[in-house]
Every structure is written in structure tokens, then in C-alpha cells.
Length: 197
Image (cartoon, rainbow, N blue to C red; front, top):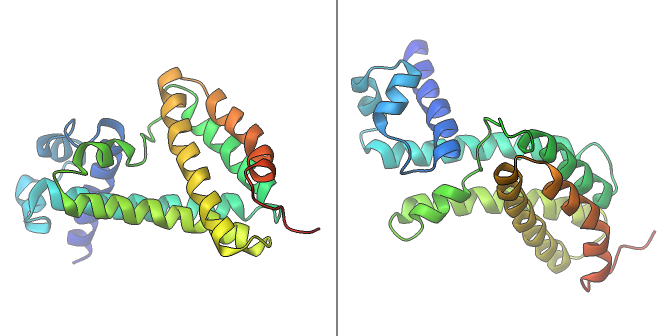
């Protein structure tokens, strides 16, 4: 049973990485089988729904990893501005080198499959909302009201997704660094009142 679970986990981990790197259409089941070393029969045993079912599991897997990374990053300081800036600087190092094996979260898959697979669209939506909820919680704890925290969390997440795309395209962490530098202005001048000291 342990070996079976381990094979399933390997398939999910490999699929998650490949989908992030190449998107949904850039990855075939044979790519996942070859890289994982897991037999084709095992893949269909665990994922009788094939590529779509495996993609959904891979999205859920990556969602949890990214959630843990965001929580750890934001937990290093109480100040939401400094915490968000530190998070963005960390991302700039991960995605700015040009050789990142991290891929693009699921922006590529969401763009490719939102109109053709409701199940994948919902899995991507769930991942994005989970990440936004962590940003919102950080802002709530700092004293922002619910609407402010929600609005800013969506804005920050959209900036991060766009910043990652620019960083990997430019092979430079600068886009994410620039976003980090704008966080104080975003919070101060977007109509959101900074919590009282």
C-alpha cells in the first residue's frame, strides 16, 4: 500500500511540475510516464479520468505547497507592507534567474482550459482564492476591514501573477522587485486607509 501511494504521489508531483513549466497542452501523458518512471497502467489505475483528472490533482497539490510558502513568507513580520514586500523579493529570486523549475503557478493552465474544462477552471479558481485568502488574512490581522483586505488581496495576487510572467519572460527578478517597491504606495494611495498605528 505504501508503494502504491508513493507511485501516485510521484505521478502528481511530476505532473504538477511539468504542467507549471509547459502548460496543459505542452504536456502529454507519455511525458509524465517517462519522467516519473511509473508504468502507464499505474497512471490509469490512479487516474482513470486520464490527463484532466491528473491535472486537477496536480493543481490541488501545488495549491497546498504555494499556500505553505506564502504563509511562511508572510509570517516573518507582522507589518503587512514589509511582509508582502519580503514575499515579492523572495519570489524575484525564485523566478528571476531564467533557469527556474517553478513554472508559472497555474496561470498558463487557467488560460488554456478555462473555457473547455469546468473542472480545471474550478480547481485553478480554488487555488487562486486560497492564496488570496492568505494575503487577506494578513491584512485583516493588521487592522484592515474585510472589504479592504479582500480588494487588496486580489490586487496583490494579480500583480504577483503578472510579475512572475514578466520575470520568467525577461529572465530577471526586476519586475517582482519593482512591484515590491510599489506596495507601500498601493496600500497608501489606492483609497485604502492604512490601519492606525
